[in-house]
Length: 393
Ligand SMILES: *[C@@H]1O[C@H](CO)[C@@H](O)[C@H](O)[C@H]1NC(C)=O
Ligand SMILES: *[C@@H]1O[C@H](CO)[C@@H](O)[C@H](O)[C@H]1NC(C)=O
Ligand SMILES: [Mn+2]
Image 1 (cartoon, rainbow, N blue to C red):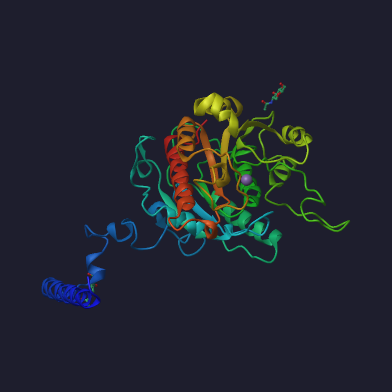
Image 2 (cartoon, rainbow, N blue to C red):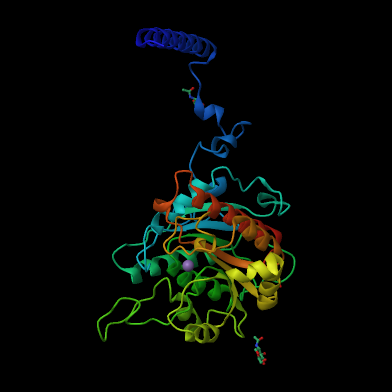
């Protein structure tokens, strides 16, 4: 085909398109009510009121379209059952940073989910059982980790100290016998789990932790590895040592009733395993999934935590980097998103007092948001677990 005939076809095509656009424009503007009053159309009593925030890309972006709430501000008196809380903190990571953008990345990944939609494998609709709100992100300073972690600790404690919207038959697991909201925190690097555990332990006493991760995170702070630091300098908590501090503070349930699942990171020394046991954990390695399957992992987890109150902490690097590349310290040989869903389904009936999803660093994600979508769906499944089982003795 010659260049000139190509040009003719192109100009004809363009003029047809332009004509169609004019037609469509005319039809729409002649049909549309030019004076739509949005306040009226979306008023509380209107059938459209709910849909303002409940389609996938309209309204405010919250976690799985949970209602946005200014939990620390003018709406702090409004009761709820679960608060989703962002912890935008990444200044204690050992390798690539970026998890401060994790909370909004996970929210973005959750836009096709809904707390009011049926989770088919879990056989539940969260909003039939729980009122979930999204509190937005806690302000955490970027210049002083101690202050930042204290900010999160106080914000989390403020949420946990309230009474939840719903109360249940039977005795609450909380030390004060009352029913409190549960918090699902979106990280942030893994260091945030320390202040969060202080919160749940304050309400329930020591908790059994189910820790999904490719790394142990129970290492004692070391001058050589966490820095290097100069002699005599205080070594601050990092995303590899927060469980060591949690054990020192008595936040973890005793008798090795805490478990890591998905472990596969390299060690500096075989003694790391002795240290890990002393901190209070048992281990399910990623590669044993091949032999024992997801059912075997579930059995090991359930035997470990028994009937204790449970805190779930999930580092997105537990998932294989092929399915979740956007994280600070990726490790190959991870578990699949299908496996994590089966394992979470197997935890049905456990008394989940709180949870976090951490180490999502959206800057390293693919354009299709694969990691953020994986993290969001995991959060949605954890909400389903919370909906299934109230925190009752
Ligand atoms: C729009 O609707 C609201 C709520 O019904 C009403 O209060 C308001 O007066 C309306 N505004 C106009 C310009 O009609
Ligand atoms: C821990 O184990 C010891 C020894 O088996 C036992 O005496 C103790 O009651 C256990 N503690 C808890 C909280 O289960
Ligand atoms: Mn990790």
